[in-house]
Length: 464
Image 1 (cartoon, rainbow, N blue to C red):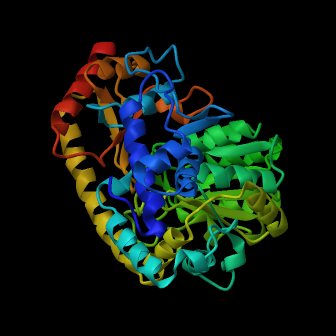
Image 2: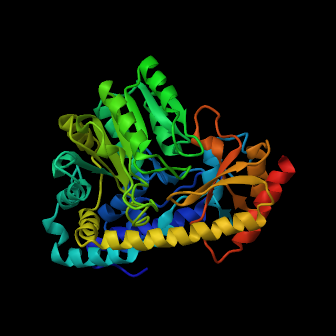
């Protein structure tokens, strides 16, 4: 490997080298990685550079450290294992990472169109303008320029506005979500979530010891409002986690009047609204209503991430919250995320130049095209085995088996064909959506997707 003279980018090269090493070593047993000094000598960089690259990978959960023994890869269950003997969610994601697998389970729109190239180009320019020696290694609340740009991006009116001090940036979405729960003292409380719900949110709430009440969405993407009103009057709910625009993974869009009524009830009961804006920018409908348009701004927290839009080079998560700034600052400072200031500045320039806005228009157009292409394949090869909810945005379909079926057995049957689906039950803590699955259309379309859809329909038919 060529030695790097530009220390600003040495850690990136080490990071990518380690990712390749981890992927090659992936197996059922954890494997030891080179020591800091050994890797520094091998790649011709400083020990501090290798330490920083390892720290990034550890924050991402790819590796873990053992005192006095060094760094190790994490175990990855074999796709041949029965989904019943392991956590189904873990098996889905471990299987999707295996070589040669066709993952119909992903939800990454940036796979179709990313901003990775422009991001890295801006970062190289910034590295020349701002030498590493003159910038802090990291800022505990996030880089100030990016915080300012995000505050401006989310400000829409004199009522719904944000300042840079209201923005907090962390290593990933789950980290900032969990820190926010702690800062607002919501651990051990009761949360209302829409169902189906993101598995990442469900896991974070479970980790915080929060009792989850799932409110099912109808096929039209709406709650049973009378039932919801009764539930809020009966249960001591302190937190509601709801999608800003498109309800993912269902892909439906709740009417503005419903959101307004829900926000009214939440405000009357002083319930915190955590608005999930992860998919807020990939809605096919123009100017969709968001909960924050109607919510009590003093009981509102918005959270999101960059990677859905920009790509995997921007994995950071962020939150916007106008209240409890002292607690949020204290916990973020204690956590001490090690985030590249240059990378954050580059993301900020993408927003400030409106490059993000142009990219979103192109991405939405491409997503809509791929959605219609997948819809045609489902109609052509589905053989009447599933009912399709046509999404209003996002990157996937929400399918329901036309007849009762054990979707876990469908999942296992497809694994044998080296196809991975996301069964509906991973989007519920309470065993709901057993007849459903999420099917992505952000795929490698060079592969025979029509054959995969046909194989899916055959597997459902065989297990019905």
